[in-house]
Length: 112
Image (cartoon, rainbow, N blue to C red; front, top):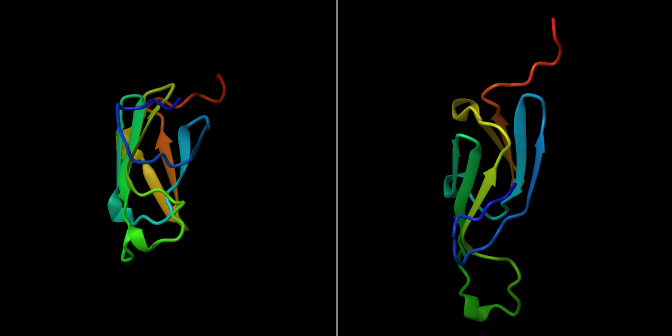
């Protein structure tokens, strides 16, 4: 489901992706970023999330240990159906970005 974009360097945030009858839901760990540092693009049957975690304040050479990754990232998800980019919703809470990506044609739950 995850497809690289030929993106060199940077880091890869962890993500969970699941599907409901009407949408795809993605939860992506993005601690240390501001909402303004994230770009979300939905098109056709793919979703791309990109951004950058910046090191603020302290110079890297003064660290005793540096385990978190910094710099740009880009995640691209190939979904099994086309999505409606106009209805994507995002909730940002405690460093977790939760995206609800509605399907262009939701499945019907039963036949009449």
